[in-house]
Image (cartoon, rainbow, N blue to C red; front, side, top):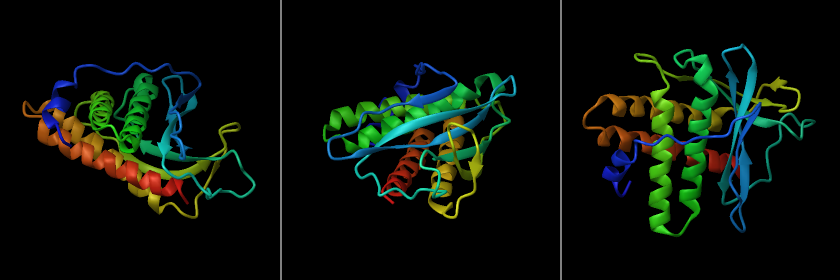
Length: 211
């Protein structure tokens, strides 16, 4: 990160997302590029399962590795052990986590350095807001990767889970560092460590989107 102090100073505001039954965090495609949508699996305070689905910008999209072959609408799905997040806050938690990745993807594609810095600062805000929703002393860890039919909610196992697993574990580690940033009067080193993990997750997802 080029301006770590800036990240610390921008961690006051939380991003407000409009959430519905299926939460879509949209990003317009760059010219010559494409988009890649994946989902988080969320159980709310009423026991209802929902999908929070960020759409990130990628420089190259596909040819996509569809699985299962007969499910052309299926999307990659990440499941986390999220008992440390209040069920009433889980949709917002995953919305913030997804929004952070959307902003990082945009930052990675722009040639405007000032805009890239601003987008990364906004991404740090979103990741920090997500981490603040994790209960004190708790953590969010990666559980599994699968594919989901967003229309029926049916899940399918994946024959190629490794790249998404790496990305999800990086997200979980980034959240852990952001939790430390919220507790430490010197948060900048923790924020820097967190952003490296989230950037790594974005890189892996970008590579996976090109397969």
